[in-house]
Length: 373
Ligand SMILES: [Zn+2]
Image (tube, rainbow, N blue to C red):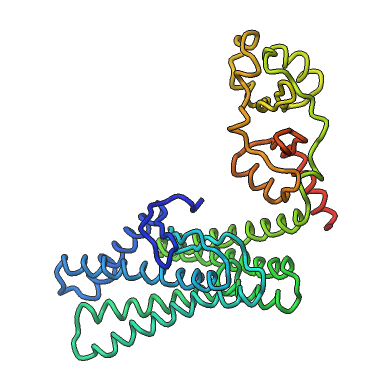
């Protein structure tokens, strides 16, 4: 979801992005700082001054969030984990890691780096506010607010519910002790879901006491936390089930091949309706040309079936996603999901040696998770 967005440059070699949803929160925060804070606490300021203070504070706030994410990423990179990008979005910032840390110690340091950065920034802004004590004004007011915001940011992120930073710290400690990543993630993400539900309840309570903007916002963040916690656990459990299993364990090898010059009508009558198969490699003189699926056939109007050939309707080899027989099943699942396809050909030395159907992979997963194997 967060891979698209506006590129705003690089820091330490890491691409920085603004997700489209970020613009909503930027406008909301700038507006509430201007209209709800500065023009209330400083009614003698001109409108231009209030707006300027709102924009500057908002930009420095997102700069602070970026610094927080950047520290997570730099610690990760130092531990050998490549970072694809950092994206700011409606709920804050996120560092896209290519892989999860392999040791609990690394996760512990990585998770703590962000909140410590926010605490340090909070301290710096409060120090500026303090040193400028004698002269009440623009910079002093902004510093006070940013100091407070950064400390709130640090404290919020240290809540021990996965996938918040505090939840990652908790998971790394549990993982360290038990040597069981899946169990540690289950506990930390259940706490994350519990905290998410509490925030939703507290948010609804606020709505009923008339504070409906803050209430809705809190409930919204709670909902986001709950679903992020649930899906991170599901994903990890999936990876765990698929770990060590290869494509050749699951592929069907008896793929009936068909000729490219067959018409769609012939294919439907002679093969699909009689065999119930949904997917056929198209082969000519031992040479794989492509793959034709029910999906491809449905795209052709029924009255064209007697004249269109398989060659015209198939997905050609060049456009086909495929894997080798030794590919990990977790990669297979990722490709099926990302490409939104139902079958993946397994190709070795230019020949289709098998097919993996999404159904087979899903039943492989569900049987293993039911048996806890
Ligand atoms: Zn963080």
